[in-house]
Image (tube, protein in one colour):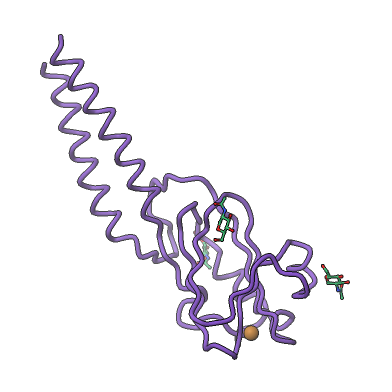
Length: 168
Ligand SMILES: *[C@@H]1O[C@H](CO)[C@@H](O)[C@H](O)[C@H]1NC(C)=O
Ligand SMILES: *[C@@H]1O[C@H](CO)[C@@H](O)[C@H](O)[C@H]1NC(C)=O
Ligand SMILES: *[C@@H]1O[C@H](CO)[C@@H](O)[C@H](O)[C@H]1NC(C)=O
Ligand SMILES: [Cu+2]
């Protein structure tokens, strides 16, 4: 009986640990993939299309790749995003590249405030959800390898613990 309780405690600990692992190690995304952060040649739907079929979780990282001086990243309100108004941003990042950790749930809005760039389509909005991520996101290639292997290890441990509970 004591053994069974201990096994169940171990199982709970492992499940908790795997949840923590998943939320600690976010995926990182290169915004626009090989296009990077620029006025999109493919038209102003480019960054909207880039977010399609991707699910962003708290702890994920956005890497904006651009040359310092050519562009910038301003985090702005929804109203400023809609109107491409870079006057009063929440935060400004002027030196490229920029890594931004999505550290809360909800919408994040980013624009480039170089004149003409946001209106030319250099704007990105992402909706961030609470984890944990349960399956790979189709149509995306997040760099989550380290957490994936930790997760596999944690899941094998969980299965072993479950087996222990059954056999004790
Ligand atoms: C841009 O935003 C600022 C401050 O948020 C506001 O004062 C200004 O009127 C806005 N500009 C335009 C063109 O809407
Ligand atoms: C998220 O990060 C930004 C920039 O570092 C910081 O100002 C903000 O307080 C953070 N938000 C939360 C909820 O931790
Ligand atoms: C998103 O997924 C849908 C359905 O699986 C697919 O038809 C569409 O082409 C995908 N879009 C992108 C941008 O990958
Ligand atoms: Cu720009």
